[in-house]
Length: 308
Image (cartoon, rainbow, N blue to C red; front, side):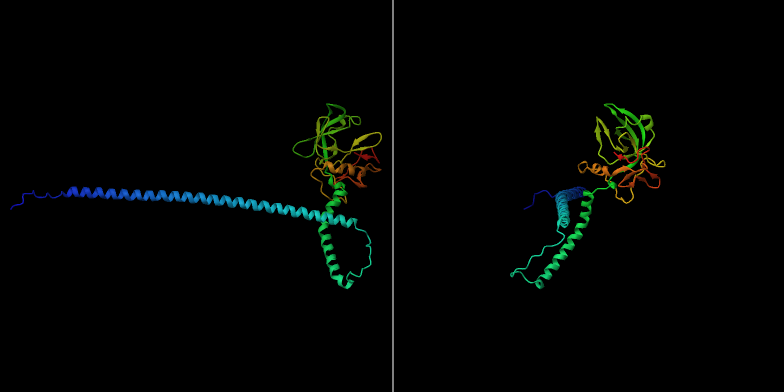
């Protein structure tokens, strides 16, 4: 019996090579696709982790800010409490009687030999309280008894004088103080000095008053004048003085305040002690208005007068 099937044909080597190349390319593509998917998954994972880290950092920043705020509030409260305790200690020290009252010991009270340590501790506490109150007491004394050092008095030059638009008794002056721009000052000199005699003159200004409107014109300083029953005239600085020079006082070395508080009425409380002496020198409690190294401030023709 013979086999009638046709003989199997052998594959072409070129076709085999092409198939192998195709399979190889497909395998490479699958590998690249797998790597790309892994990279995308890793990127998403990193994005999620970065978002979480960012949120954690923001939370830490907020916690830090809240902690700093609480510390600042606590520190402010401690300072206020310390100042309050110190001021109370100072006031108690001022109102305490000069000589203590002695009361006899009752039978239930311990003898002096047993109370000495307690008395010593009380004296130590009093000493600590007195030391803590010294700084606040000096501030209280400065507030209760202000002196002329709190006034910012400076030399100025009058650049221009004109009548006030709404008042015949007032002048409006532009003055130079060595500052970037002139200041406007309203004064009541119309009945005492013609405007042409004021232009170019050196005067003394109180500069740390709060600006106020006088009949609609804002006045940024106060022009100091000597006065008596007949007349009023501006104080005159020494001839060598320049705009911006400070007017100081021996024995009163304090620094002026940036701006006087109107509620404390510092100027009104100091004004009764301002006057001109028998030679026309402007003084505070007998101490001359002085431009250091250049001379004294005077009233040209008013002696033994007041200053306003």
